[in-house]
Image (cartoon, rainbow, N blue to C red; front, side):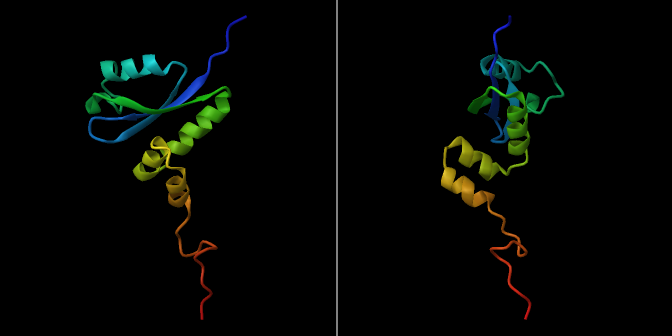
Length: 109
């Protein structure tokens, strides 16, 4: 019987200040692979060196993939708030600011 491995959603900060989000079962190895530049077509190849600034463990594959997909859609500010554990700021950045949102909607006169 094989041992269960955790999955990690991770965020790398690239040399140019951009973030890269991924998922792996071995974050230390994955960081080494990114910095080694094994794939010239990868997002991080031209942005090395990279450093791991966030990782969260999951024991459910689907939850890990869902969280990774969610983070990839976030703004740079929102990712930074997550990395810095600024959860109140993360909540503020998550609020919808469209005029049609229920909090902002005003009936036409």
